[in-house]
Image 1 (cartoon, helix red, strand yellow):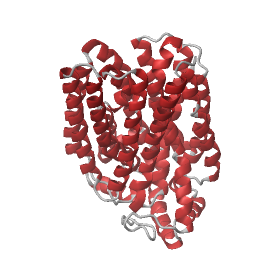
Image 2 (spheres, one colour):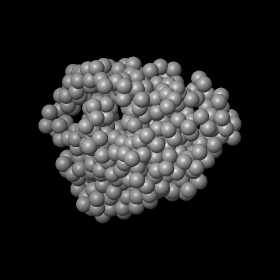
Image 3 (cartoon, rainbow, N blue to C red):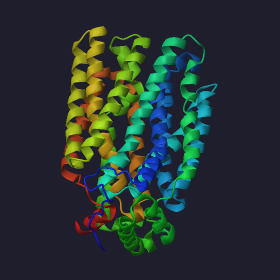
Image 4 (cartoon, rainbow, N blue to C red):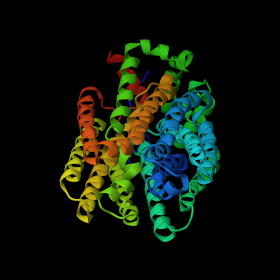
Length: 471
């Protein structure tokens, strides 16, 4: 079996061409990444909606944490179930189902009369967010040429942060102009119905993953899909490689935990779970979910904090553009290490300045500048590398299961951070809470340096072959 990466014609340097196949692939990518947009919007919108729903839903620090983190808790189970369902029923079909779940959860949260309905609806939304966090990157990784996989898969990360920016912007607009209107937070939430409908419609016009089709023995359709997204000779060569590996793995195409008795698969699994943990223990979602409250505590008024929080969304989008550009030019591993060092340093400074500066506008702007710096490293390096590597390191027979379990762990760590953050701040102060994240960040740096491999410019099949030989 060949293990040489096969770049599509015209993309040897990772640059997209303008053939009919390239244009079709770009359309498929933008449609699928509406799932990422929904992921970003639904996780980010609570940031600005919480201050306005506090009175309507009689929120306490405990129920505030519950409302914010219930989506994340649901996402953990959506991820692990989504991975298995994507292996069994296909990536495309399950993304269509996710669009319906996004719509139902959004409507439930927007109309929620009390905390119980709100938490239940956000749990449902979480199932869709978690499923999308697994299925969309896998789908894109399996469609993309090796030389462009980094840029294609991280477009989903771009759409995630774009969704968060959209949430921050609409929250600021509605909060500043209609903040005195009863139930303005409901309008903040309901906007997500539009991309959900777009995702459901659009996915009816895209093909299934050729690698999933090959994994179930449907080689004719797999070859047909590759011809839609590759030039003829490239499609033929890639099909032979995909077919050879699919035949090799066919009997074990639905991987189970028993497969982890193989040392090389166990190693890949540990790397995947480690990536998930170190991406979240930076404390990124304390800023993404509670950014408005952090800025309010630092010295801004509520309306000013909503507006200032847009800067966090803007820098996330710009940093993700930079991250996508870098992924085509530098290795995954050094990007991850630089990102971890940068975020840990920013958190240390947030803790120090929160401790020594008096509350007021000056402290507010200092904290804002540091959260922006933090997000530049997080969204420009850590997040795109994490989601990309999770989509590419697992072999075909456990790809859905492996990514599902890893993202389950990612969301559970996210849940722990988002649920505990307001409680920790109330009990320990904001500066001490960020010092806790600094200690965790140092541990993340040490793990990444020791265990994370390099995967750049290697086909999925080549990566599997190298992992087999590494143990």
